[in-house]
Length: 560
Ligand code: HEM
Image (cartoon, rainbow, N blue to C red; front, top):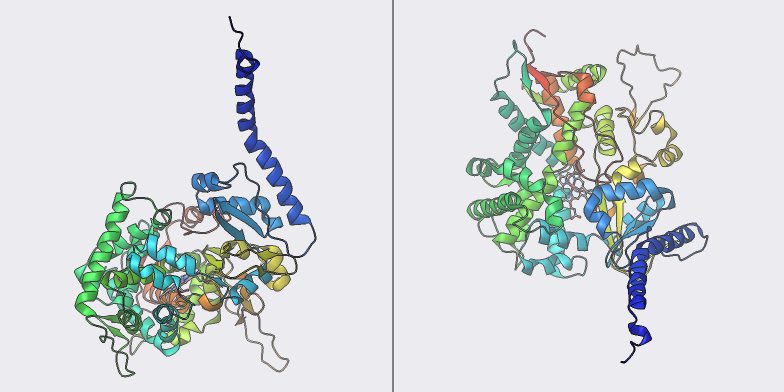
């Protein structure tokens, strides 16, 4: 009988198996220990030309994929910042993809200023591909922005220059007047009357319909809403699934979101084919009106006509583009306007002060508001900025398309790394704000403070002292020295071109509600308990935890 060789001895075999199991089981622990050691060493060592360290992980090759998937990116990034924030900049990895988180104002400034090397191009391709469902053949046009290719430069012109032409100054005033007229007409149809308070169960849902409907009609005209009454509903269904589309979830996993997106694209395409035929439809002369009920605002006519002239931008691609601007113009504007009104209603002094400020800019004879004057009121500007700081959480992404990028004396960013800048993270950093302008932290950054961005005017000795009647502070609005800490609208070359329009929607909505209606939170304490805690998500819509009931009635102007 032949004896088994030593290697085949059953006991040894069992031990080998055990050894393999032990090795496999200890891989995550040892990987975590090693990556943690390397992370802290690189973060703390004082040397130049360092590549930012990767946040500790347990699974080699996959790095943070599992945590990103289970927690979702907004919570994952918030948790990572809460844990390792002091050691930024650091890298988060999802397999081969690297994301650098920066938290320093000087880094942010440098990144935004380096728009040729650090670009959002890769992000834009992803968005048009995965979220907007653009045809594959146009993706290369988006991918070549910045390369000098003619069609790509035209796209860049449509995305950035066109809104900057139409959504500022006197053009913005005209378009804001259109918004005000539409909002007033829509609210009038609700027949709120002077005698009786009407309760609205949930202010968020109410605004989701009313503000979006008015914004859509202002930018895209009346006909699209008449032909497609479910536009607003489908839009929010689509918008609330953007994270799912970005992750590439297939149709069978989110069927109703896919169906809403299909409907949006089909209906928009049909509408464009009927009202924006050919490529010479836009009426852009000085004498032409800023808004047309069929074709939409001059801004949108101009934008779509630039795209229509690009070979390869077929009707499907243009419909996806229109969806992108619907998303850009509504997704954050409605929530920011909700918080603008909510924070006002919470504070009776603010309601009183702002009502009187708005009244001064309302002409009872013509029944119209002086929008230009309203938008210059410092407290309204400060509130807009404070809402953007506290109640918005946006992210700006840039990918390094050049070689090693020198971030400062210590750090370099490797090619291909995507840099993440989170507005809310910077917005809540007391140390940075107090260094930049101590006055801004006289009240905790966790609280809403309408006057945070006002600089009180010093009275000269010969100036007569007026009696202060309002309990709301006054002063000059200023962002001097703190711009890099307030990046809700991104920055640099790609700074949001629609930000003035968003402010116009906030100010116009507030003006109409304060001067033509009385609106009150039904229960202030209960409403305040619905404010979500800060720092739980690095980015994403900040929405109340539950319903916010309000009551409303028409203001009795005659009596006043
Ligand atoms: C409160 C409302 C809004 C917020 C918080 C917001 C925020 C942002 C942010 C963070 C970016 C990225 C900027 C960057 O990468 O540096 C952006 C880009 C953009 N936004 Fe806005 N936005 C708002 C309203 C609007 C409105 C009303 C419009 C249009 C009417 C608009 C149109 C755009 C466009 C077209 C871009 C892309 C610019 C590019 O091509 O790089 N946004 N916005």
